[in-house]
Length: 113
Length: 110
Image (cartoon, rainbow over all chains, first blue to last red; front, top):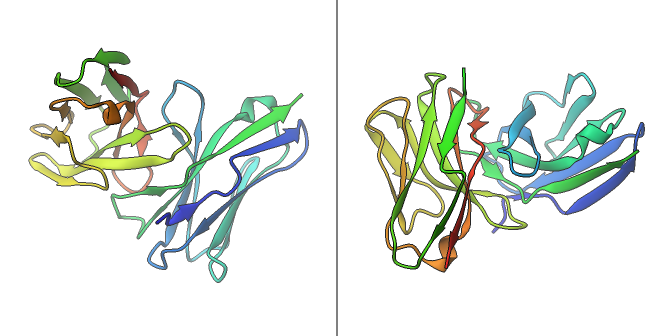
């Protein structure tokens, strides 16, 4: 039973345009959400997070939106750059102090120059 | 500051062999974790530790063991390797929800 779902295995976007990666969750206990970026042959790196008390968090070109009623979050990358090409994982935890993350399967983003 | 380091990077094991994957962090994080990632899948938690001397099972602990004698080190032991343990293994550490990952160990069991 997947508690964190990323339904799009892959996404292609032109350089300079917006990339939107989506994530859905089923567990109502999740209240802290994170996005990780992973290049081939490397470990995941933390990108951005959001607490359930917020509906938006922004960091440079990256913005995460949270819709709690729909149990949905999205990562927006504007403008997209070729170096953003990677696999993006959505993860969730039951509290900012929790030590366990549940990961989605990932979405492979390709930014075309 | 090296962050989280893992050794070896690659390993091929025969069925029934044993090995230890090493993980060390230099950030003085209390929490440490072991994940495995199979092709096309997300990361699944094998074991975690909330501090030296304390470990607990994650989602997929069967076939693995861990120990945590120091804050820095969190080795993962595979006993009687099986083909189903072919995967990429990631170690991570954290002091809160944001986890920092090592580069991974690619293990093949044949």
